[in-house]
Every structure is written in structure tokens, then in C-alpha cells.
Length: 378
Image (cartoon, rainbow, N blue to C red; front, side, top):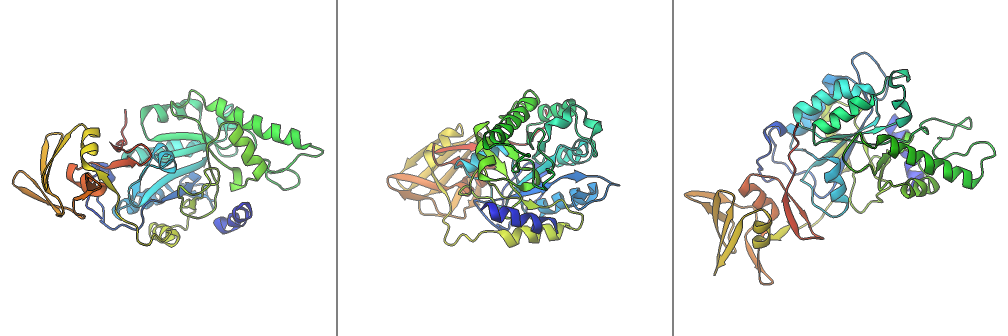
């Protein structure tokens, strides 16, 4: 796996109609993939700077709006972590990530993300927080980071090391290479303490857990990964260009590059599609209707072959073994029939979501159904 990551660095560098929040735009209704996440990687958004990892504000916005219009669903870092621990995510799920903590994230990317209510996480090089304007590309200040994370519920931060984002004289990345005459113990302590320093400097800038990291240059090694995990990192991202699944190593999560100037909105769409993992014969996720209704603050009653659901101010009547529900005089068509299974009446999670007009998340380990948190500005 580690060899694949190193190789991929070279590669990286060269429906169900669901009522969503108004700012998530319209859906195409197409389901391209389920139970996997396209984690996108960006670095710098700027109008004048040029590089292989810099895109303009207009391209960034066009990419996001195009994905929205095609039916992609953007999730937060917290939702991604819950997914990795077993929870569901929407079909066509996307996580937006940024590396390096550049100030352009605050000045150029953040206004776009905020206007579209699209979650994102930025992995920060914390040594640059001491003098944000002193780095080659200006970095965000502590105040700017804190403003974004506390003003919204969808902007997060993570580690990109404290002071290991550089190459050693040997040409190796500082995270994985040893200094001259450095012992094994000295090396592991250097990585461990640097990770601790990164987490410590981010403390207070966000109320969310600080347990995520992106490896500098996308490079890691078993020894480095062991030390960052020991320091408190639970989820770490590489640049291996693949879809992320919960079966992947949580400390070797792949990402798809989206932040190069030649990646048009359509090219990004095709890039994601090429990496979708086949899921033959995947059955729709079903939940206990009565338990789900109770967890959502409603109630359910089964009388023979009739299921009556009360959710909020709405009451639904459904027939077991049928694909239809009624709400007053209105008829609602379901994608999957209501079924009686092992003594329980079950309903497809997507059908339940469409009925109440709210996206839902289900955690099989706990059997809990809950509303997805809507991205909002406080």
C-alpha cells in the first residue's frame, strides 16, 4: 500500500428525488455510487498565482456547482468520520479537503463554500501560524481559522504536521526520512512530538475533535503512521487517487486531485466516475419503521397489513408489501415496498427520507436513524 502511495504521487501531479436544503441546488436524480466517498483534494485558490496545484475562484465555484447540479452530495468531516465507523452517507457523497492552510482558503474558497453551504476541511501547517504572512504563500492566521470554524458548523481543520512539510537534504520527505546520524528512537520521537505540537497549536481554534491529518506530499511509512496514530490521529489522508470506503485503512485514506488548473467541471465528474467501485447486487438499506419513527420524534402503529406513521406534522398510511403511501389525499410512490421481516415492519431508508423531505443517516452498529445536520452559518 505504501508503495502504491508513492507511485500515485507521480500520477497525481502530472435516485430517489430527495428534498435537500435550498442551497444544495437541484439533483439530477442519478445515483452514480453508494456507500463510498469521493474525497477531493485542493491546495490554493488564487486569481493571479499559477502552479499545478492552484486554481481560480471561478473554476473552483464552477466545479462545485457542476457537481451539485449532477446530484453529488457534499458531506462534512464529521459525517465522513461517522461513515468510516459504520454510518451511512448519501449517494454520490463528496468530501472537500484542502492542504497547507493557505490564506487563500479564507479569502477565496471560504466565501464560495459558505454561499453554497458546502463543508470542507483544511489541513494546516501549524508552524506557519507564528508568522502567517512570512511564508512563501501567505497562510491563514489563528483568528481567521477560528472565525470560520466557529461561525459555521461545516468548516473544519486538521493537521498537516507542525514543521515537517519539507524535504531533507537527502531528498526524502521530512516525515519519513531520517536526519544525518539520527537513530530510530530519535526519529520516532521527532515525528511523535511534531504531531503532538500540531494538535496542540490547533487546540482552541475549533470545537471539533482534532484527530485528522493529511500527510505532506501524500507520503507516509509504517513507522511514521504508527507515531502519528500514537499522538492522537485517527484518520489520515494520502494522495492515492481512489474512492474512499470504510474498509480502507483509516490512516491511509485516498483522495482524488481536483485542484489543478486543467481540471474542468466535466473532467472532475469523469475523474470521479472512473474511480467508482463496483457494487454488484447491493440491496437497498431497510430500517425498522417503528424504531425509526420513534428516533425521529414520531410514532408508528401497525394494524394488520397497514402501517401508520406520524412524523412531525405529517401522517402517512402505508400498505405492507406495497410501494405506495398516502398523506391525506396525496399519494406518495415509494421505490421499495414496505415489508414485514422477522416480525418487524421495515421501510427503505431512502423512501423514509423522501417521505419526510429530510436527508437521514443510519448507524447499523447502534440501529439509530437521525436527521443529517444541515450546513448552517451561525
